[in-house]
Amino acid sequence: MSVQPLRLLVVDDHALFRRGLIGLLEEMPEFRVVGQASDGLEALPMIEQLKPDIVLLDVNMPRMDGIATAEAVRKRRLPVKILMLTISQHEEDLLSGIRAGVDGYLLKNAEPEELRKALLGIAEGQGALSPEVTGPVLKALAARSTLPAAQLLSDREVEVLHCLANGLTTSEISSRLFISENTVKTHVRHILEKLEASNRTEAVRKGMQLGLIQNEH
Image 1: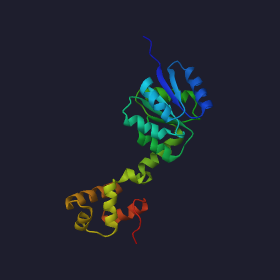
Image 2: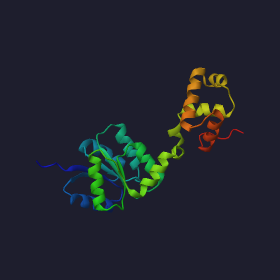
Image 3: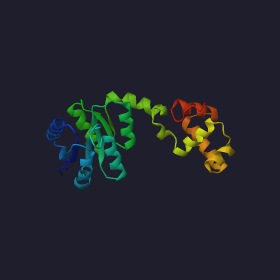
Image 4: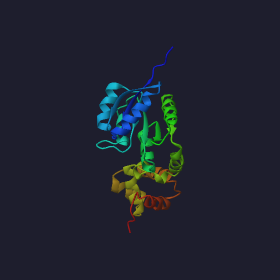
């Protein structure tokens, strides 16, 4: 019984690279390129219409970049795997891609066989990560402080942290934010857990270090 080739959509704003990549992929019997696009805005309707198995996305593109495209794909719950194929080794691009729900992150200097294995692995539900970026990813994920503030605390928790920095008591925070004292205590507990702080003073100090709040004095 013959196995149907995986259907691929290539999204990259550099036409020469895009055409070269498509030519390479078409030499591999496991794949069939069903479409190409120059950015996310062009790609999204194609993903919905063509229903590829895997989308190969560049990170930096005009109008709609790869991160925003991946987020849009996941928000629309489109059943497609995503491989970031980029020159960017920036930690923030990497983490943003992971948070956006990509299935793999491969650098454009990858060997053809590495790309082939990555695509086949992603199709089977495995992740794919270039060796050059594995170390930075593991370090960043281990140190939560490298994540943007929005990923650490909710807006309400940041408000409570501001109140703590101003020395307000639970009762005063309750009055200022129009929430119950029990809710305040719950927010404080979550703040301590997320910032890995043992008390309110340490939470305020860590919040300042992370840029979540400014020194009020």
